[in-house]
Amino acid sequence: MTDKILVEFYVAMNEEGEFEVGTTEEEASQRLVENTSGYRCRIVKINAKMAPPALVEADVDIPDEAGTTVTFEDTETAEAA
Image 1 (spheres, rainbow, N blue to C red):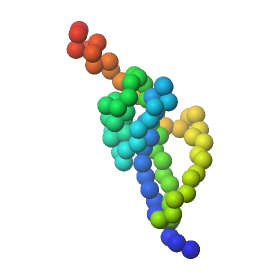
Image 2: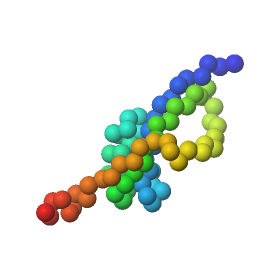
Image 3: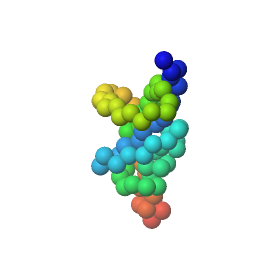
């Protein structure tokens, strides 16, 4: 049996269901701001133990109470004020 490696990453998802992934919470949320629309996001840290190097799909159900919710400032409105 191959030893599994712990892989940690963050998923940031906005209210439209668009998402970005990063190796830090900040990286995931920044990518979401830069590449999608929306003003709120939910960030969940994923800890996965994986055995390399096979390609395998996994279905994961994230509990509603997991992660944090962040509200982004509307930069266009803030600059106009």
